[in-house]
Length: 606
Ligand code: GTP
Ligand code: SPV
Ligand code: MN
Figure 1 (cartoon, rainbow, N blue to C red):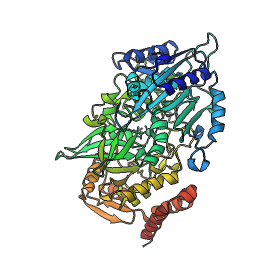
Figure 2: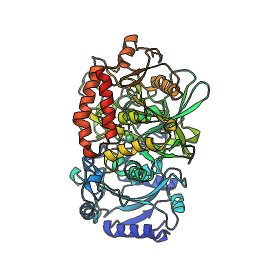
Figure 3: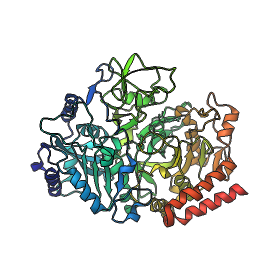
Figure 4: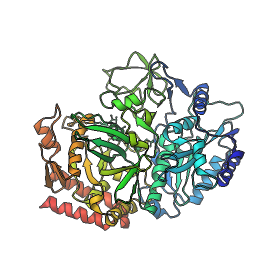
């Protein structure tokens, strides 16, 4: 489709303005067809940016290697450019929107020279659903177009719903590497140097401007940029929730169903939990979403969630047939792999795929690599944040209702992170406000999902939303508290804190995790109906040591340890929250959370 054929006047004008600014060689409005997807892939194959994988093993699947500087989100180049700095809050980077636009406009000037501009109409949420939101991304990256085909609903059908004057979120994206006459990418993933990258959000005008990165959350603008940073602002204004949460359907042996969402920081187990295969007989887990949940209240007073995405952009390392068979089966075909290693027979390999690296590999940097198990310091063959992009509908565990525009009613919220000590396996909040308190203090050992935070240290990541909230986190906490004050608490989801990542003194995980987490889900299921064995403790409601059946390899002492209330550890935790965490939010930290802090401290000291 040609730009001239666009029926939406302000969309057409917006695209024409972008064309004059970025001066691409040609412009294409994406239709979302299979032929278009194939053309994108062919284009990247011709430019030496992609490798076709073995058609027999991984049909219609491709490997991309990024520039070594462009392998994850860049939080220190991500901006919330609200009119007032105070609205962005102390945990977001801020630049005055007028200044930022001026600066970025000069970067966008001529940035698509030598390239094609693609205009991607996309819907986050089922096309036409009243919860869905439409965005239009302009990009010069065929890799982005192909990924958007999998991750969102794209093309003509979205334009049809948008009509002549519908609302859309305008999203600019350019890799920031114009090509001179006759110049080609020649096998090098195009991007701009780090200090030229900008992932910018303008909350008041609902706009996204991204420049200089081709990677995941920086470039697939429907995902973190629209579905979380911009949507969180809409949700605040309109009384709903846009969260960094998986959504799962849990069925007990009696056939009763509950839907549960979970917020864990990046690379802390959402995809795995969403696709879990229970180890306890009779229980079933099915997937509704693995990364983002949009939730609204319905007339019955309950909160309903939809997954705004259509695919999974999942962490490859650690994914194998034991840890996540459903993910492995999802990504057997029609999948894009980014920064994994390549085998001689054009298969993929990564650390934790479940078997040794066969023969001579090509690592994620494109260099020869042979596994050397005697060398503990060997650089990984796959980047720790290497990813697969696979269609959700290919997941064997996908729930029938995953695209239901009404959404699914939520019974429980889980919060969690990687905490080697102190935080027990599971802990139920005593009330909504106690649960909000738990969400506000989520912390995790840092992972590889973002470039510029030091791996291994513990970072507080409230509600797993710290990198994804489009406004002041203090106001975000207030929004959560207000939902409890303005709705019938008995109909709100119950809140739980989980931690699959407790380690012993030898540094080994005590809890086997993955499918065995179903044992914890079963206890949570029962607690939603006020059943199950529990003890009321100073930190919350915990299972009795015999309430959760022990998996193989977990001794009675282990179980006691991970369900213990570590009074001294918690006193330190509380002190850290009081001294280092809460003060960051200044006056905007709701007083209700300080009251919770006082209350838990008092209980710990009693
Ligand atoms: P994002 O896509 O970055 O938001 O990540 P995510 O929260 O979906 O994390 P994911 O499920 O992809 O897991 C990240 C890593 O944690 C993988 O290497 C997993 O193997 C590992 N992991 C997931 N669940 C568990 C668990 O229960 N126990 C342990 N020990 N590791 C886990
Ligand atoms: C995350 O980092 O939480 C992800 C990957 O899910 S990205 O799309 O890059 O945000
Ligand atoms: Mn995520």
